[in-house]
Length: 422
Image 1 (spheres, one colour):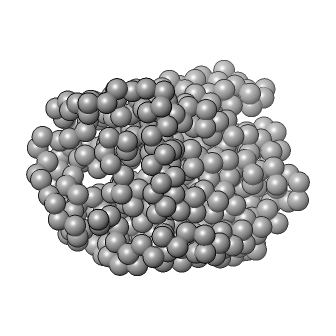
Image 2 (tube, rainbow, N blue to C red):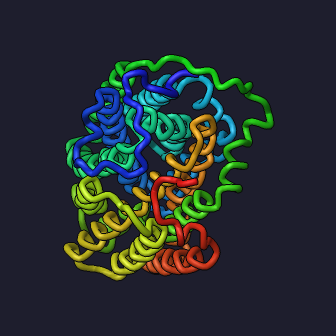
């Protein structure tokens, strides 16, 4: 099996995370991985803000914004037992490269549709379905590979910077996408295509670790190993279940085009600014976590910041002032960054490497349900009761989920270290 161990990676059995802020970047394979993921994420963010504006401008129907999320989530759900097994057997670096290549192809299709003219959103929905398939394979492979690129003691630092690559992209991508879309939709999509092409080449440059045999053949039963592990490991189950329901209810990103156009009266650039605000808050917090990793009471901090995520979502939902809305979104991003950092570190370090791809595949379904399916929930609820009530309902629901998880998952609540101790 490829990509399971880096022959240049020093052995490190230390349990405590290393706190040097940039230590993960001492490992060249991680640098290539980080850069590839950053560019791919930046491109997806440009696509996301541009597609959302174009579809809403074309139909003026919030439900179509929900469909954007749904068509990207369904592949995660339908392929969950395949994608994890592929990541664990085919090779995580190869799967990452193939996934980015498919994203590149679909982004090129959206560019073509934009140049030739659109009379309806269906062609975009089809291309986004392809991107959803690519992401279904990309997620388990990418999440599982990073833990093999650095020693265990450096991994929490790598998680902070790995998360920050997406968050930095979520700042520049939406703003850049809004500005580029203001010039012309083909310009925005063309830049995204170029970034995905570079990301693909960077993945190919990541050194190929020596193959390692696990001694286990892939069977129908083994496809379910990730689900079995999560069901048995209550800390992991609690962490990803918490994220599922909190973001499923609390996510307001899908409705930002509605807020930008109809509530705050901003144009495409304003939508990009709103989309960037959570990333600004998240990057600030990620930099802090890289220098000061969580060392104790990890479970309690996770639940606390999920509750804060809900509170700040309510604040955003109620705001009709541009600067206050931006601040609220930045606070949402900062709170979410803490929960992402704790959840992803727990997930990777509490999971055996031989099933890590399959566990991450199940996790990607939970993440997809919380993000893309959350967008579907928000879009259709907004069409039913209005955007503001839909956002407020979601924020209150996120707070309630954190309180419920405190009671239902005491193992998560009482988890102290990010690293599992026997």
